[in-house]
Structure formats: C-alpha cells, structure tokens
Amino acid sequence: MSATRAVQSLDASTDADAVAAVLAEDGCVVVERLVSPDAMDAIHDELAAHIDATSAGPDEFSGFNTRRTGSLIARSPSFRPIAAHPLVLATLDRVLGAHTSSYQLHLTQVIDIGPGEPAQLVHRDQWAFDFFPFPEGYEVECHTMWAMSDFTELNGATRVIPGSHRWADKLRPDPSETVGAAMPKGSVFMYVGSVYHGGGANRSGEHRLGINVGYTLAWLRQEENQYLACPPEVARELPVELAKLVGYSRAAYALGYYGDLQDPLEAVYGRDAGKVGFSANH
Image (cartoon, rainbow, N blue to C red):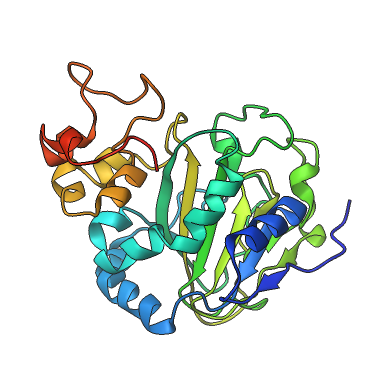
C-alpha cells in the first residue's frame, strides 16, 4: 500500500470543483500561493507573542519540540479572512455539504515545528472522535494547512499518503509510504480527515510554521472549544457568516439552541438577530 504519486498541486486561479475533485481522488491537494506572503506575515506579527509563550508538546505525538498555538480567531484579526477563505468554503460545501446543511470550525492553531523534531506518527485526524469507525467515503472533517513559511522536505513539510482515505481504518502505515506536501509560503494544503498523514521531520535549522484550520460537520463536537476560544464578546466583532462558522448557529432543527429555544446568534447580536436576515446555516 505504498504511495506511488506525489501530492497534486493546483494554482490559485483554480475553482472549488477542481479542488474537490482532487480531494475525492487523493484525499489531499495543494493550492499554491492562494494568499500573499504579506498576509502570512501579518498573521505572524499578531501571533508572535502568543507563539513565543506557547510551551512545546507534552508527548511524542504532539512533539516535544513542536508548539501549537490556538484561539486564532480571537487573537489575530488578520487570520479571520483565512478561516473563511471563499475557495476553502466553496470546497467544503462540496466535500462536507453532501452530509449536512452546515459545518463549523473544528480547530485553529499555528503549528511551529522546531529544528530537530522527528516525524510525527502517521494518523487520521478523524480519530479525534474517539476512534469512531465512520463509513468509508463519509467525510466528517476537512483540514487546511497554510504555509506561514515555505514547506520543504528538509524543514518538516506535512507527510501524507495520497489515496489512503480509501484504506482500512486504524492502520499504522510506515513513514516510508508517505510523500511530502512541499509548497511555497502563502499556499494551502487541504486534506480530508480520513487520509493518513503526519508532520514531517524538521532536519533544518529553522522553524517550520503552518496554520492548521480544521472544519467538521456541525453536529459533531469541535476539537478546539470555540466558545471559550472565541466567546460571545469576541464573536460580536466578527462578520455574521464567520460567527456562524465558529459555531454560533444551529446545526439542525434542534441542535445548538440555548436558553428558551433561542438561536445562538441572539447571544452574539441580541434578540433582534433573527429579524435582520440571519439564517442558521452557511
């Protein structure tokens, strides 16, 4: 079951149909230079102090020389357009929209892989749901990894096995079966939750910085608790569609209300939220 092909790359002029088609085929794809390097620098400038204050991981899987800094919606205004990038959301409509009328942010974090960090265990992100065996082809989450710095084979580019979203669950693939998702700064690597992948080994003398943004079906629990990471007083500053993406929306008829069957948008915008055209879904 070794990987026989590289990660496919598309240019920034591509459309969501093309991205979704590659995700269906390979479970992963790179869209090169989707945003400018300056956009990545602006996010880094806003988060630098938080990254510096973040401790390295507590175990081998998290990485003893890897820092994971979250709460990006609240901490970085420049990050917010990235979380709701039109091409990403249009792709999610195709990948996750087949199973639900709405999806939500699953997690937001900067992943800083330091020099000397070995490769991460190859895994599936959907194992976060307590290793529940979702049916093959039923994608419940999709992730993006944005390159804050160039991703290279040397500095720890994400390793992935294209096509492995069709493999059996709970396998332990050998790292030799993976290929690197190398990409220039400002590019995005998209991958579904069922594809086998892991952080690469950083054999360089520099830090590899990436922004991991995950999305999941809105009726599943989020990995990062968005209501603590982005409480109502912060969500109130956001565009309505982004607030709903964070999770301030109903996932279905009776999922996500609060109080006396109130729409969660009322907690953000007040009781008149429902009178000005807000809808529950994306």
